[in-house]
Image 1: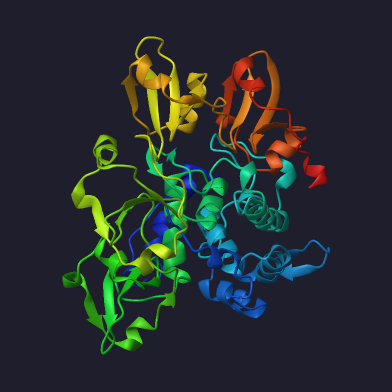
Image 2: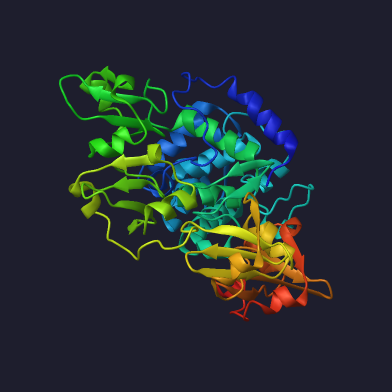
Length: 449
């Protein structure tokens, strides 16, 4: 999305920003909150204009035509686009600084205006000229962020999936983070976004990320996380991961600097023990009883992992089907004789018919070799498909498809591919067997979006 040179310049510029020491550390899985991304009412048009003037960069006195062909200040153009697509204006300002340092630096060439937000810019230095121009760059950036939020299945990086990005393991924890990785599919670029956001727009507090706190005179405990204070409403939830000896006492005034975030809850796949002695595994918000002590041991659980809870802690989770097999959370099993690999969960085994599917869908999963007799106890399900957001083509055809909701949607033309911000290097070439595993879906055409 941006040339490496501009990343370096932008990083250097951060040293000259008036900055408090960042109170939080960079978490590649959580860049900003969903609310921050879509808070289009976070500021006013005049505040955006004045902010750019105060920074004294290229945009301080930059005027150009808006989409209505009227000449306006850059700040007004940014604000108008933010309102059109209900995106936080400060997010657009941060992207402008990340991509071309236009907020704090003078321009050295016109291309910095022409591709101000890095929209339709590729890592190999290529750009798409029809998306050039400051106003169009701002508009398309805001549009694509909004479009992702409404059509996340049409993009590579999605909530609830694990990816390898710039050699690092990334598991986007919210839609805003996934949206930013789809816009800039690199770790360094998003680290830079986060640094600028923290320096300029994040609500500041002096408490380090991950600190457990209690307000003086109060009993409640909070976790400071991503500039939010997350409450513990259950003692069992707290003790599952923390100890009271780590809780710091602060003033109510300091605590109130942080907005309230989502309550802390048991993590997925927590083991919860009821007063009856029954042990449940928490799976995607449902509690599932483990059938027997023998199965508990066969799965590989240990007694020290079990958390004793009150009935009030359990009742908030509906009870699902009991666990009767050793793979409640899913596992990759390979037949020692045939070499075939299956994704096994509960009493079902799902064939993985090609290495491309295995490496794309399960980049960090270990494969366990088992006997054919061990696999024969499971019912056979439908073959695993490529996950949503994967771009594919075959060896004998130039046609490119997007895997969307289990189907292969043809991308109508180059204009649509580029308008969506897809990267040519991300196209996976597969055989016809993998292609035909996915039914044909609707054509993606940017002229109809």
